[in-house]
Image (cartoon, rainbow, N blue to C red; front, side):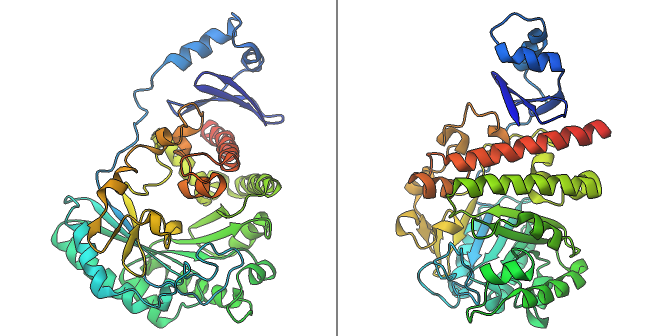
Amino acid sequence: MEFRHYKDIIALKLENRAPLAFHARNLEVAEISEQLWSAMKETSSLLPELEELKGWEAQENPDAKPATRSTGIRSLTINVTQICNLKCTYCAAGGDGTYGAAQTKISVEKTLPQLKFFLERIPQGETFHVSFLGGEPLLYPEGIQAIGSYVLSETSLRNISARFSIVTNGTLINEKTLGVLKNIKADVTVSLDGPAEINDQVRPMKNGKGSTEQVVQGLRELIAAKNELGSITLHGVFSRSNLEVLAAYRFFRSFEVDKFEFTYSVEEKDQNSNLEFVSQMNLIAEEAYQRGGEKELRRIALFDQYFRALDTQQRTENYCGAGKSFLVIDARNNIFTCPWDVGIKEEQVGSGTHLDNAKMNAYEKPLIEQNNCQNCWARFLCGGGCMFIHKKATGNKHVKDDQFCNRTRSLIATTLFYYTQCRTAC
């Protein structure tokens, strides 16, 4: 893929497809002529083809929405356990789901006052989102039920909507745990990295046996109860030890779930693997579009996210709401801004119902600004990138990881081509 710039406009050309241009501020996409594409080689020239481009670049789209700024915490991730029955080869939670310090169960008695503290600060009519994480959260379904029941009770009294989600390895779905998920109508994400010959290697049980058979059985039970749950998503993680992303997509399609997520490992730093992941994602996009057009392409969460931003012309200034609208409560009731920071003492921003305001203030500025992304053409679709990934690569949350940036820009560029194709077809 070839790129050409003119101020806040990026032009792209892929093989034999017509070139297109993207207005970074306005979130507008348009096909351009071959003449204009050629003229953009010399943007300093006075070629008449560039005049229209200059006019478009100078425009401010009144429909492009500024990024919304949350005024308080609206989302909590709660580690109800910090133990796991799997031992994934790439686990970033201490290698065994413990974050370096196993904790069998969170104290519900300590957690409820924390929930009350945050709920009291949410205006009526808004939504409060609780996500359950671990370790493996379904090792403590009683804790999920108690927390969920409390949140439902409190929000109903104050005209606040409650929404729940869970990330699980899928091996512990049974009548009891499924009942808990139904009670809170949870959005369920099941971690699965491909068919058995792949998944059993990278996501084995602690005893060394494969986990795929149990995951598939649990997934079938979830799908059978789909009408009583929220959404169901399959989520795979990929690195140099497993780059069979297309194979995972084909396997995922055998299950009637809502979304597919394909994530590049936060721990991976290999450049060749980074490039291969992008290549595999492009193959998935092509196959998905051929199979079912926009609808099938948007079953892939990444592409759906970018399509929605382009359709609504909603700018994003923060890759995530860490420290702004989102916090994490670990299984010891300590508070962090990111699930990956759990257990790192210097990253702790509170405990119980106490928040360290000085530490929280450090997260106030938009990530685009903090990460110096103001001149990147993809900034309002990317939102500044993941602070944890940046820190793992560079040692600083606000010094960008070039691999992340290149990967993200490449996948956004792929989205722009399919978005143009879909909207032109409409």
